[in-house]
Length: 423
Length: 188
Image 1 (cartoon, one colour):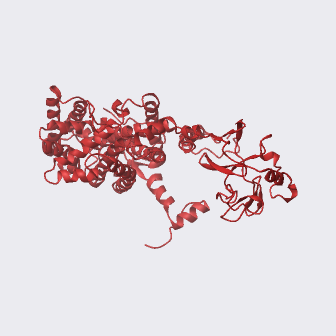
Image 2 (image 1 turned 60 degrees about the horizontal axis):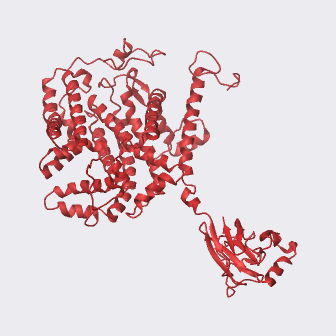
């Protein structure tokens, strides 16, 4: 494989580098001329948005780390110092704090898009599984980051979540002690959470790289869910999707800025303004909103070990989703039943989140049990049999045919604006 | 961009010269650049001294206990400050120096406050590579000019804190300070 790259770049410096290390050729191939299905809708922005928010989180996180003290005696006050004394510290922290929420919003939409359009199906199973790994790393990172300000919710969140592992027989309690590095959540716990909270984002970057690399092998799915057949089905990534992604990024940053500047504590919990107190649990203890559905699943099971298993299972089931869904048709557009049922599943997920927000009493117990059951019923029962029962609608011949009529013809110069989401 | 003859032909527009697309591209790219610079400045500025650091940037020193010939070292902004009570002989030797003999010429009067020429207040950091010179205590080595002697590379300063022997290139710096009373100064 040794041999210099024949670079086509005119600029002599770029050419010199590219001959020896063809990064420019690679970027041109993967993000310049990369053939991309021509019929993306705006839901295909969310991968790029996730990439953007990941970079924002890493950048703001590094600057927060310069001022944060991972010590139980200092942590809470060091965060207050960031908010009051450090130049623009309030801005950097609010961006980081709300950025976590934005990251989850973007990722959840990205995942739902994958489920709706069947992006997890052959040949993108590994791409999907890497995505689930990314979500797990995100969750671990977000959880540990939430502990760092060392408020009441930080402390009790850490206590409750680490205690989940105590549900496992025999090994449970030793694992919890090992996680804590002591006999309660304390200084050693905070130190290791800080170290891991700094490490995991870079692990995340690595897995995201694999996710994108796998994507560039299989190519993107598209709203029709059918394969790219001819070059007429695609457009080069640049400028078509760089521009389309830029529009999405602008809207995203606008919403993000509105939250940061006008409602920075809307998604936070007031209890976290109270320094951690190991002797008193707050009366209402809830996780951050993005964990609420899983929290509701945990509480819906009356058995400790059962609840923990169901909670972890609700995410792990996603790993085998490509094999649970037996339908060969990808896009929900051509699956009349699945198209409705996926929204029923989404509704169950949202209701679970709402249940997680409320105390486990009365109606919420019943609701969260029904929704938990439906969550698993969807994956484990509905999807396997639906592929056999459902009569899919006829698939279009090619991506270009429904878009530009005749199909296969050269692309008209003005065919930029095209209706993509015909209900 | 205002000169159509200087601009290359538009890539996509029907007309030659500057196109609407060139304009949009310019606006979009400069908008992104300004936005990135604005948030970038917040990140960079966060590394500057914070409000709590700036708030402790002044130090008061009581001069009464310092006897003639003695010097003390106080902390100001994390740096050592030499405060020395000079003897009449030391003042005289500092004042009588020929300016032409100095590496960085400066009169003694320019380095003390008027009416308080027995007090010399200096930032105690060698202008060579940042070591702390010796000489505050009468038992320290004070060099050939009776001021301070830097143990790292042998720079020597006179009783006015002026460099007399290299490798240091400059006199010891003076911190901003003022006399609040005859026996009390405020540094910073």
